[in-house]
Length: 125
Image (cartoon, rainbow, N blue to C red; front, side):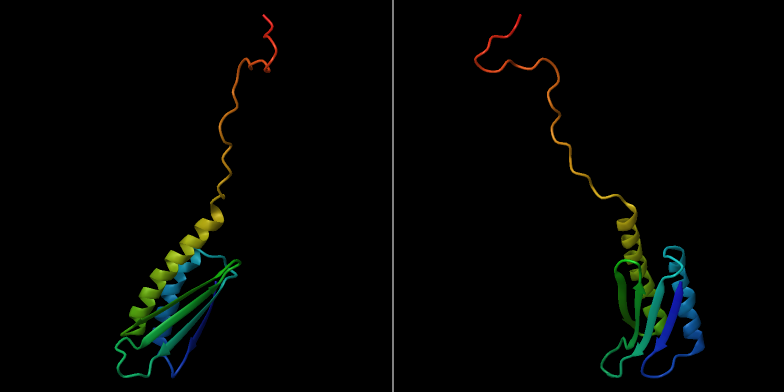
């Protein structure tokens, strides 16, 4: 797993970066090693928004890209929420790839035993 961490609208302390990296390593055992995870740490500048710390993540998989965005009062709380959301998405993605697709039903069984004689003919006895 390759992790790309980016900070928008300012800088982020190293302690927060290490926390985010440590939390996202939980996903490492569920996804392929060559998977790229892009994480963006952002801060809303509007003073009316209470949950102004935003963490966004995009997981680029072989199939669809998984994306999550969470906001909270601190980066740590937003990261915890985001990791929970991404774990659910990754499990659903893995289940879809692992389980077989449903096969068409075979329908009713054909009758077994003596077949009726065609109409107009007498059965041979």
